[in-house]
Length: 125
Image (tube, rainbow, N blue to C red; front, side, top):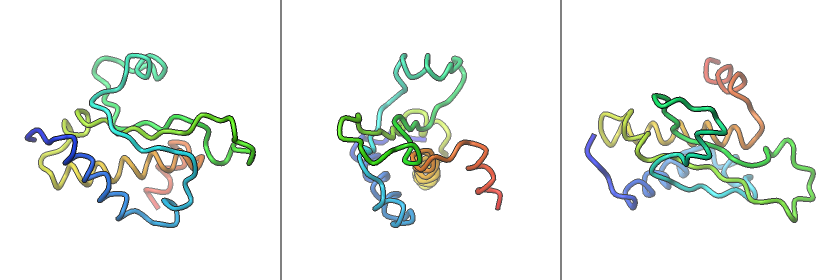
């Protein structure tokens, strides 16, 4: 896949956000959606990623199901989409968009407290 600019990548994120179920998007509180070229060394270490593991996206924060309603001092949550990793699994811009959308939806599910087993079960249904 050819390189795309950060602006183009951010436009694809925005387009994906607009296509996802808006009830879930509008109910998200205190969470930022950002992009990065690659996971940081700290993220790789915390997740125990090996050199050959790809990390497409990551939710960091307190899942909504664990929030008590008094999050005044809580650091905002963050969903990061990793541009270079996502481009590695895409054939073209259309498949990149679909992968961004799928990864974003997956990380939003983590924000709502779903674990990988829950997500896989829902995707299979």
